[in-house]
Length: 290
Image 1 (tube, rainbow, N blue to C red):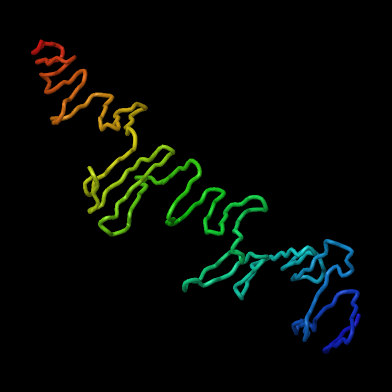
Image 2 (cartoon, one colour):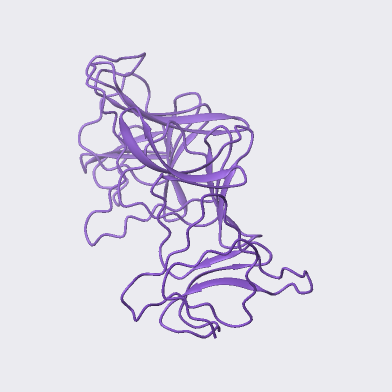
């Protein structure tokens, strides 16, 4: 074994069969300097495929313990801790991770240098969990949980959707037009292959035929129904007639047109049945008009 207690300069190749130790009684750090490039080759005789370049700690022998980072022959690298890029940019192929300032705001970004290449985030090479296309549209492979607001100009759901508020109080789903203008109203439409239906609340200034300012309105281009317990309780047809499946209980009814029906009972002492007007109780059936 050769010991060099001072600097050693080799003008040619130095072949070392064993371990090269840079040490002076643990008093000085080991340093390798070169005024030109430095290259370390593994598997220099090219007779293997599984050799590894390893930087480790806390030992003098070679094995897979205490590895700080390693580079395999196929180029894959493994780091035991965090990877800090002080320049703020890490790139692999056309993909990159970097810190960018856009509009005066700093962002941590994951993206692609190619404007024609979408971005995908997945668990392995076959499962795509999040996809961002070249137009900025984002698709989720599974459920998404958001702690704050989700802002978008449109929401396209390709399938059945469930909105679960999961609160031990009123489970409100609010739709709000935050514009302060007097014409800012709120509307919700349902569209199918044969037309649309709409529910809307007018603003303080907006009106339309039959709908006053601040009124709540329901529209359908065909019949509109109200259901109760699996039965259609009220039907509003396209002729603006209202058909009730059950009894109507009310106070005074004022009508500008005829009220028709098989039986109309009023004020407990007058009723119409089968086109006849009766005075008294329904059980007595005393006709006033024969």
